[in-house]
Image 1 (cartoon, rainbow, N blue to C red):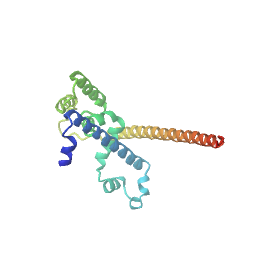
Image 2: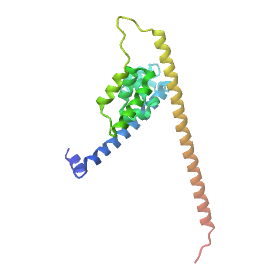
Image 3: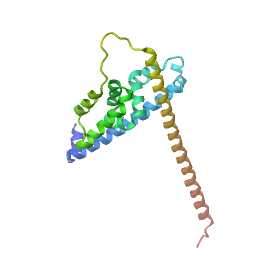
Image 4: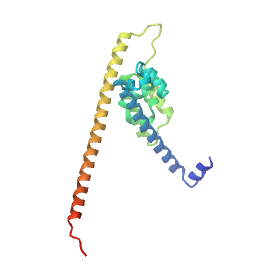
Length: 207
């Protein structure tokens, strides 16, 4: 605690808050990369290349290796792939809550309203204000003991899963394209270096 006091005692609250937000954004980006990488291991079944989990389900692998529950993992994947900016701005937990409470069809409308509210306020929106917007779009609970139509739920989940896989493929392709461009740039730089060194060797030596 003494070290923190020395580090921040000469900084304003604005400077400290800015640093904290920057650190949180970095941690969110790191978590996003980790979650999408694990999702790649799942969809490609490459997690089974770990000899300890060659015959295990992904759920077991996820819990043992990363200490993560499958439901939380799935929510994180959906949030990061469908709403990366909103997840970074308001957290994966809030994005997941919007889907749970309001349904996939209302998600965009809810986030649009939250952004508009924040724009009107001209200040960061408070958690209670976001909650009120979510509640105004929350799906009403069905009374009685009506059981869910599992076939419909399965079909919706399957469609959502397919859309998520497509977005992951796009993300992986974008990363691969970026890496290829970096490699080409390295080759170009090296070629210039070799040309420069050859020209230096050809220069006459002066006494």
